[in-house]
Length: 223
Image (cartoon, rainbow, N blue to C red; front, side, top):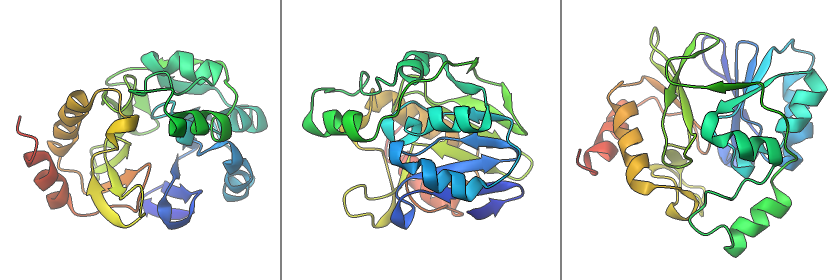
């Protein structure tokens, strides 16, 4: 577990930061894949947790959600459009081609069981000392978290900071084959770039502390 900002920790559940969850205060954000449960339990130890939030309900973020909620007796929070996937564990419905072999493999091997959602989050809600940003595109219910006082952004999968096939670090859009609406996601990239964040945590890839890279990527997409 790596502290990336004041009371914000990155928990990498795959090598090379390929899949990350975050602990902000007493709130665990995202949950890796189904087999990540033991790693998450080891990282969290006996910490007193209050809730579990999903940036979105894809298999590599939702996989151990039911485990966390049951193990630590946590309520589950997510964006309203992702509520069905979070509650049923059927997480590939928004992929452009949910029957693609990779999508079907993720559903079979990575997705975890569903769990009841206690609270649906919307723009401006507070998660600890972070403000919720609605950032749809990669998933229609995708959310990011923003802490203005020190410029910390938990970006989920609006962007990835690695090549998803080679794991080489670098800032990219998320793969189109797993993105509900690429054009809408680019609008969300512009939205977070306008904040000029100083620390960015991603669902995939290492932490970024260079907002110039984000601004340069956003500029490629026009307005």
